Image: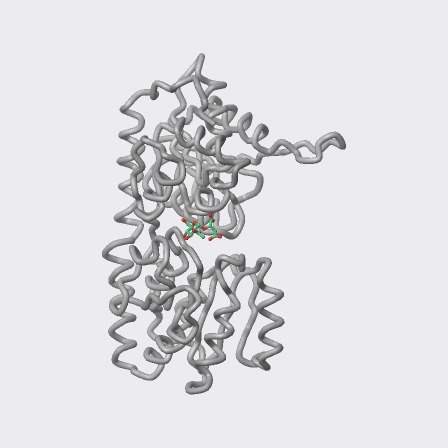
Length: 378
Ligand code: GMT
């Protein structure tokens, strides 16, 4: 197949999933065309089956907001026509599914261009529910020829929030278990906690500092804070206020997470909400059990007490106690680490999940173009 993929190319779960999906599809013989405003951060362009098409957005003094959505739609239509794309797969509804719908319509007189939209979470729970984006998000979701969500939680939320009747297929996120794997020997001398996120308030990175504060009352430990975003400054300030500077390392954005993760012992993911929680899955593949929150799609990834722990969001004491259980009971840690790796391999490995996308594409392609209602209900 010839597949066009559009995603946010920056650090963020949806862009990572889209990029790794494209790479896996290329490895399986498909032609993949990334269409975005920048090269996706984890994209390895060595494969001759991977192409990248940059979207250039003209700036002009008249435009306070350069019209990226339109430039993207034009580029999508152009690439689809020139390279004979079979379908467009967009990650994150806003604005990508809107652009894809425009591209589809531009080509409609000459050829068919089916659109698959994958919902990742914040496009539904935060942005899509904002009144200003609500009608256009619902419209573009309904117009997509195929819809997938990264968890059952998100599928249900999408139906609740948008009242759409179209089927939404759950295809869980995946991890390459040959790349993300445990190490025979870790290189860090202290017990190591790791947190990986975009440091938005929903990720609650300050809770990680508070958890560490409690953990080091009993065990010598350190915390690696990986990523960047609005809560990094407040997290650094809290670290200084609590006098924890020698225990916390703010590493910023890191490219090769698979090299860093296996050296950690426990992943902290104290989010208020996660549609899936990709960082937890990547950690599990490395045999690093997650201590996370019982929210959103996380219970679909982590079986509490078996391959990680789930506690209520904000319950710092409970999360610190779970970390200590793991740090002070080597046998329990070993069992949980092995179970975490097993879950990643047996349920979420890319070799299992990518064929589900291929089958989904084939179904969309065989169905023909949906009959679309001409009206938009606001
Ligand atoms: O979590 C973020 O802020 C980034 C966001 C995104 O859209 O890139 O992540 C969402 O998609 C990821 C990949 O499917 C999921 O693993 C995250 O759980 C989801 N984030 C939220 O639901 C908050």
